[in-house]
Length: 329
Image (cartoon, rainbow, N blue to C red; front, side, top):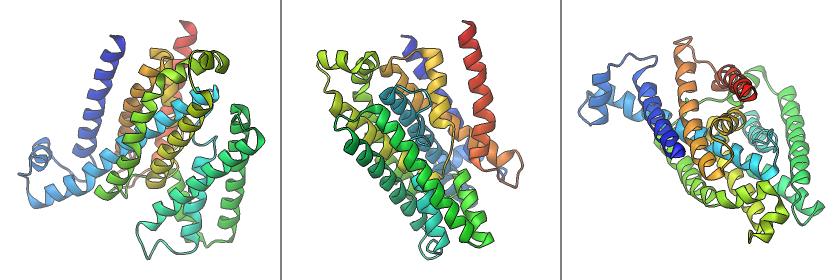
């Protein structure tokens, strides 16, 4: 019952976050303008701003934030490590390397979708490398080896990024750094559709693994005795969560702390039952990133702050407060 109440509250928070993200920004729109545009009865200019720019951006924030938080919760359960998230496992580093390489080669000016495509390809390469190294070291997919593989692969891609930036022109370096800080500015209905196609089915599959993750948190041997196909669950959970994170990073850039802070915050408040933790992490992550994007747009309007900066400044103190409260309890 407690989980249902929390889920309802977070669902309302997501809806309100989307509404506020559409309502407020650099362009002044009244609540009436927004509602009329959503109903298809607004003026041409207002409808274009709401339906073609602000609403896709807000929905992309929900999908990316929810996906990163859910992936972080799964990685933390899978690796039994509270620091596990897309950064640690090299996925964000691979995506960043792909995007930076595309920018350095000047390919993004010709085709608009090439930047997220290159980032997604880099993330997939990172996933394949981490998975391949872990499997070659231990066919049973030892979670310690998987974590170490992610750290090593992430360090390799960081070195690749540093080399590309050292050889690049100043303008390209600025573009690459801004992309790596994260932004939802390029959101379109097409990008929303692509991210949704990866994220929503993957989320349902990960939710179906919640019971198995609960058993594995007790211990792999115990989970195996209770009928869980431990190796299958580990490979499936890692692969699916990685794809969710890769899709989000590809279209929104490298946004830190969402996959780390949000699952921790939900766990501290609601406990470690993954049947509750996973859906609540998705909702909380979606609301958090959408509101963070709103702050990034309005704090220094008309200038826009990189969303990764906002998630760090807001997320870290919030998490520290939750952690301090839980320790006192």
